Image 1 (spheres, rainbow, N blue to C red):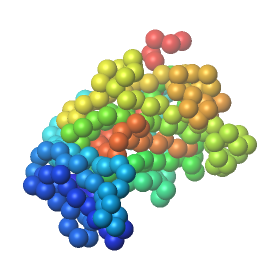
Image 2 (image 1 turned 135 degrees about the horizontal axis):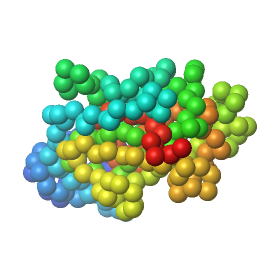
Image 3 (image 1 turned 180 degrees about the vertical axis):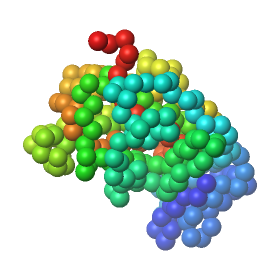
Image 4 (image 1 turned 180 degrees about the horizontal axis):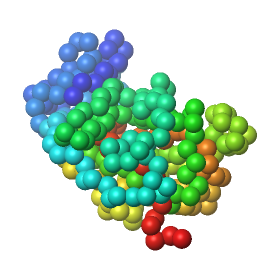
Amino acid sequence: LRLQVGAGLFETQSSRPVVVSIPADGLVEGLRLGESEVTGFLAGEEAEGSLTVVVIEPGAPPSIPAPRPPARSPTSVIGIYTDAYEEADVDTLAADFSEFGGSEEVSLSATDTALRYEEVGFIAIETARRPINAERMSHVHFDIWIEDRVATGLSFKLVDFGANGVFDGPGVADDSEAEFRYDNSGTLSPPRLSSGRWIAFDIPLAEFERGGSFDVGPGLDEREHLAQYIFGNGPSAGPVTFWLDNFYFYRDPTLP
């Protein structure tokens, strides 16, 4: 753990210096597992409020690939990032405006790779040059491995640029968007987030439509020009490091 806390403005103090150290440069550093309360002093007077720092064990990366997706008809699936299906034309797997510490593609087996995103506030994948028409698809699927020991939230946003193919902004011109937020209190599968294992999400696209369960944004008007797919830390207290694999749209085979 390394956290900057206003060096030069406040004098800071750790309630447990053996757990959390605060050198003169204000860079908080975790020394061992445990918890410490950090308080600030200005001109000798204790400042209002404090910061509780919890030092935990670093998370573990995946040692096995995500489960292989089932065979599907090419007309019933649109791959974004997956080794199982043909992938669409993706502009970037980490757009410039994303807030994250870094990314890399890692081989987990002879036939499978996954994306590792570090210290993510949010990460945007884009298909703006050739937007995705997912109107006939029924679900979006992705597999997530959360590397952090504490897994408290996740968000996933779909952005449709509309027929003009240009990002005008949420609710402007023909743009629309909706966001799925998961904080371990929802009813969708999986029932709870946890670290150190692959978690499969299968989300009905109808829930992203205006009036659906995930109409934060305020909801998709259509799914014919999808251009951005944004993963974030959701209601989490801070950046999250996670792995992504098998990201695709598909049509439920039981549908006509």
